[in-house]
Length: 233
Image (tube, rainbow, N blue to C red; front, side, top):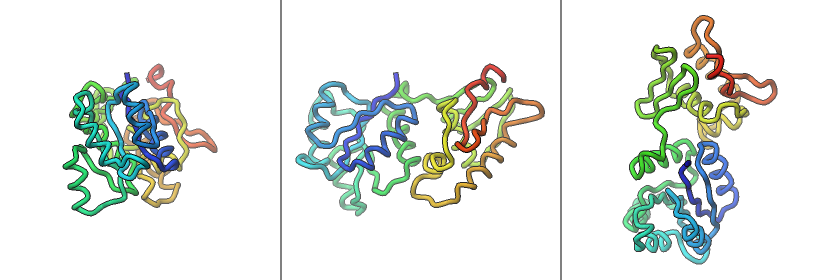
């Protein structure tokens, strides 16, 4: 079963952004706009991790974090605080209340996802798949190594993240804009043609001779990891 993440965020745009990217990562996402809604959601099903906004209506994120840590059933649930407060004093306050990590808005989505994986791996290693394998292509998230047909594939950091992003959902077509947001982060401003350049580098690295190309170009739409690759590899 995929890990369940509770997103407690009253800003609609941010909640939508988080839901989209976390579901693309394979997580099950539950959202709440207030502390009261969050407590009801937790009572219905205990999440595996909570993304908790600091500034919430009624009950603040800090107060909700304090309450969750005081309860036996939620005392060990990983909590990441999301806030616009970046001062050291505020970070210390959030962490001392019981949060496991602290992310300042605006945040990098890839960095946030990496922190979520790290916390889940620490709390329950079974919730995070260490390796992605499709056909004769294997990507190990723990060692950051890629192998194809028993040979090592040497990728740059961007090509590695791009391959990992595409392999998570074979068959799903991602536009260049979606790949920029998911791989580079929505706070990095680069031209969409950059995606084409790195796709080209990725293809040259993973394909040898007459090997089947696992990256599918969808004209006018973007790129996908070919869902038929495993059968043809």
